[in-house]
Every structure is written in structure tokens, then in C-alpha cells.
Length: 397
View 1 (cartoon, helix red, strand yellow):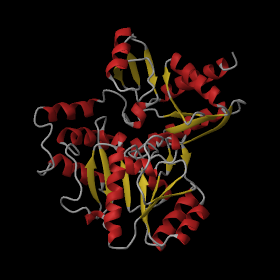
View 2 (cartoon, helix red, strand yellow; view 1 turned 90 degrees about the vertical axis):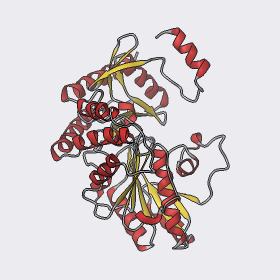
View 3 (cartoon, rainbow, N blue to C red; view 1 turned 180 degrees about the vertical axis):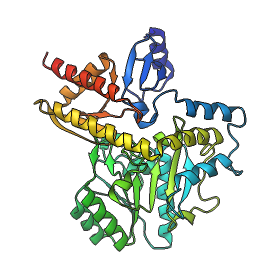
View 4 (spheres, one colour; view 1 turned 90 degrees about the horizontal axis):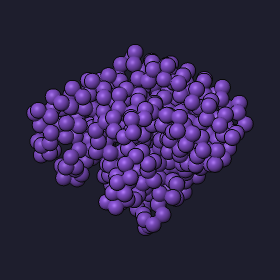
């Protein structure tokens, strides 16, 4: 990579990221190319943003068409693209409404604000999140986030939050018993940042039952696992659960910045004019890209293919788990993880994959998170398995 770019990156860009010394300059389908023309199989997908890979023709055409008309106008006016996209998102959810913003953390903040407004009329204010959870980096969503490493240096955080143990219903019941002003629960049905930790169906169903019994709002954070990632258009469909609110981002914008809050009739109208807003959220360009992507993903055949490819990928990965360096392999649809017994092994494995032309994510020190495009080819999955096998062999060197 050009040393001048690296120098200028250090000189002009705030150093809040530990970046690989690689500049990605082009992409096509499941592949990206760096400034040295090296080809990589991209199983990060922009951290679950590029669900249709790179340079998707329908998304590009929608962007180019909208560019000729209007990029931004603000929410002072009715935006037809926004209305049409919201209609598509809630097609099978009668009475639900959508608020558009620009990111996952903004979506979660808006969900908290809707909940707090609802809570005024119900004398409730406390929000529960869970161990292992990640909900964003703005102050409210950061408070709900579990790992302390994200919070260091930013105290005091926002009052009115408590933490329960994930996948342990007794932990939640204890908090409910001692706090009669519980307003809402926010949960990731699959904890992506924690290393693809799946919520157990009996636990999540019990969580829903408890929330209904105690008039507590249930918020599903699907920022990473929504929009087809798990083989359903929304992850909560796997568990036969109807959250009061769920949040989306990442893939919802087809590669452009979009976040969304989907609210049930119970709470949707509590954000009244002037109580919340965004300048760029739901702009015509982002809506055009998001709609073009969403409509390709939200079909029975496409989602069925995600499920079948995910099952195949998980089965092949589990064949690797007989290796004494791997603790566990897990996943649902096309969000998967390999957990190693040590951070040293996981870090070296991620580097070996990178050097062999495969991009994966190292998360929580011991986990390799795998997020291929949803339209990944079976041959590309097989290619990644070969690289995984080769990298495991090289761990012995």
C-alpha cells in the first residue's frame, strides 16, 4: 500500500480505528480488490452491510436514477421514496410504522425515546439490556451495551438502565421483582459483536411472555441480524415473537447509511411532531438504494437459499471443529462464528486468512465472525473452507 496514504491517514484521520494496512478500492459480487490489485473473498460484507455483495446492478441503477432527480430535501416535506419503503418494510405487520434515521445506534436511541415517551403515561422508566449485548456508541445505546471496553473514558453514562444475564430468565425475573417501574427490555436475538451468541428460543419466548404480563416493552435489536441475514427477513420470525419495537440498520440501506425503527401500534404514535427528528434520515437517495436491495432479499426463494447455504456452511465448518484449537462453531443463516480456545490462536488465524485472500472479523478476542454476502455462491463457500483448513494447518507452524 502507498506509504504516503498511510502517513496521511495517521496525520489527518483521528485514530479511533485499528485498521489493516490495506486500502480496498474496488468490488464485484463477493470479492474486493485492494490498491495493489490483490483479490479478497469478502466475508465481512462491510460488517453485514453489503448483503448483496458489491456492485449490485439493481441497487446501482436505483442510485443512479435517483441521483438525476433529488438527493436530499429534508423531512420538512413528504418523501415518496420514504413512504414506499416503509410500506414495504411493514407489509406483513398491520398498524406498524417506521422512523428512518442513518445508523443502528440512532435507531436504538429512537427506540429508547419512543419507550420513554410511552413510559410517561405508564409511570415506567427503567430499561433492561443484557450481558454480551452491543447496541451502539452514542450515550444511550452505549449505556445499554455490555462490554466495558467501549465505555472506558466516557462516564458518567445515562441513568435508568439495568443489566440482566443473557439466556438466563431467572436473572431477569429477579430485576422485575425488585423494580416495579421497568419500562422496556432491549435484546439482540443473536449477539453479533459478542461472537454470534444465539438467544435460546425457550428463553426468548419466556422473555416475551414476561414482558406482556408485566406491561414491559420488548425491543429487538436486529441491526446486524435483520434483513435476511438469518434466512428470515426479520430475525424475530425464527422465534415466533412479536416485539413492540425492532430496530434495523446496516443492510437496510443497500450500502448507504440507513437506520430504521419499526414500532407496533401500541407505541408508534408516541413520537409526536417536534419530539424527535433527523436531518438526513430517510433521504430520497438512501431510500432508493434501500428499497432496491430490500425487494431483492425479501422473496421466499432468496431467503430459502440463504437458509440452505447457511446450513451447508455451518455443516462444513463443524467438520473443522474436531481440531483441538477450536472450541465451538455456531451460526444461523449466514451469520456464523468459529470460537478458538485462545485469543492468540484466533488472531493468528484471522491474519492467515487475510494473507490467503479471505476477509473475516476477529471479535471479542477469541471469535472469528463470518458474514458473507447473502447471494454468495456455494463455490465461494467451498473456497473459504479450503482457506480455513489451510489456515488451521498453518497454526501448527
